[in-house]
Image 1 (cartoon, rainbow, N blue to C red):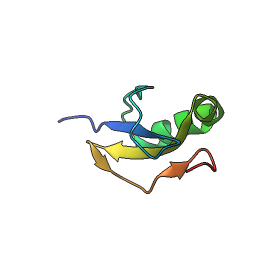
Image 2 (spheres, one colour):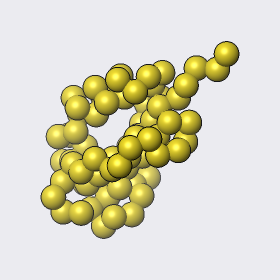
Image 3 (cartoon, rainbow, N blue to C red):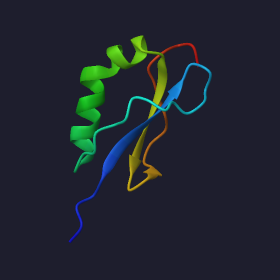
Image 4 (cartoon, rainbow, N blue to C red):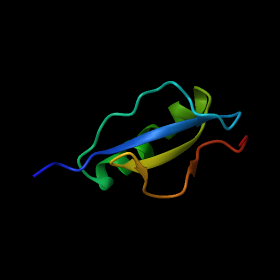
Length: 70
């Protein structure tokens, strides 16, 4: 059995995909969301405006806005 993979992809303030940071890989949605909840201020401070949760590479939910600039 393969363990599900949950990751985040990020968008900059220009709405374009951000090359960095690279999301850790999580085995469940709860851990992925908890990680974002703990680190969103740092991400926003580094120019990340939104995050999209991916499950096995496919969007699992709408984008989460980290900044009002998008």
